[in-house]
Length: 323
Image (cartoon, rainbow, N blue to C red; front, top):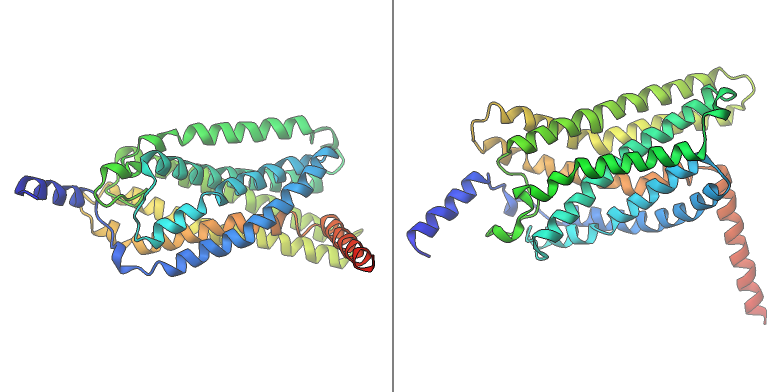
């Protein structure tokens, strides 16, 4: 390598704020991704089946739950690529287009899931607090339109992912894919939007809706204590789950966006935040595995259907063994 190419390589690494890739152990994150795939894939497939039944029965909530599970399944399909990428020392081997598309699916899944979680909480809020009035408001057509609008807005909003230099893995000597680098105006603006529109506002909606549901149910005299406890636990779990999965990642995005105005091209901050950023990414993936547990598999009707299905399988297996 001649002097000019060496200088260019060093300059690219300096501009890119090379994070400490070699200092981290890939096994914990790879293990986490493997667990998420193992748990999330069957859970979401079961959820798709049962929510599709609810959709056919004209259940408005089923539209949001079905869409959420399909979205999670799409993201789970990309996790093996991320796991291999991390296990090979952050070496992306599938080209820039695959890198950008995989990143695009990741970002879309996160925010479509967040907005659908808000829709689920708002639908439950309307159904519980305004049970009588909501009969004319909660319609299948409205749920379908809202879901389509959410998917379209999020998909269009993340089109800039295909123009980001962080996705040009083939043009990098290290073949990285969407690793933290020296932020630009576009990335900083996107980080602000993702924090406030994609995290803070939905968090407020989730807290208000679940708190109102909790207060209304606890004040009801017609519900059993067991039902009240279940509603309370579910409401608290949904908010805590949201905070654990999405707060670290979005706080880091906000801090990175703010630091962009004061860093003046220095890379110390980007290097120091890399490990917390990696951990926060891992936490955000848990969302895809836990969603079915919170929103579908805790339903008494769904659990009864699963129990009946298992009983049917047992009886059929016994019959075949007797033949």
